[in-house]
Length: 204
Image 1 (cartoon, rainbow, N blue to C red):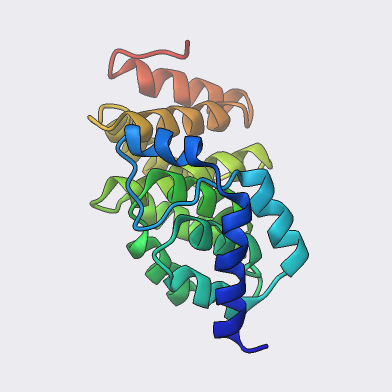
Image 2 (cartoon, helix red, strand yellow):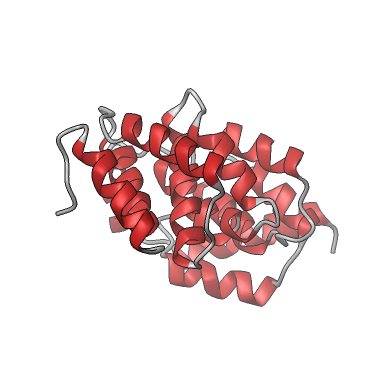
């Protein structure tokens, strides 16, 4: 079966996963995909396990303007095979918070160059790219990956800006990553506390 046939078959399988109430709830929250079957994440994970890692299929699925195709693409893309240039294109094309979150958790945090990309994304002009950066750094900090001195300064500077953003999702993601940063050790905890106090905030 060629890639196009596989994509067609996968798209047909979403009909069985269809959940109108989830799709409607997303529309009510202002999340508008070109096509959205409302498939739950556990069902998509099952499908990803069934397919297994597949670079070419992931590339083809990502090109489809369908919520489930994009999420599935992030689940089956092999993190050790994908090039930074491809990730750059994907990040540029993300246009929904859910896709930013799923891509960060399913794929971006596992990339061999995850930390380097995440720091680049923090300085991006758009909120969704920054969101990816904070989600990835949260995961890396949880896995006890410590940034170097330059990384620490950069992270704190960018996070202080994001914590004052109008975008609630971005503020939450930034706060989550600052919390994870503070859990790296006493020095990090003190740095995080004193930094966020400068903008009149503290950990709740």
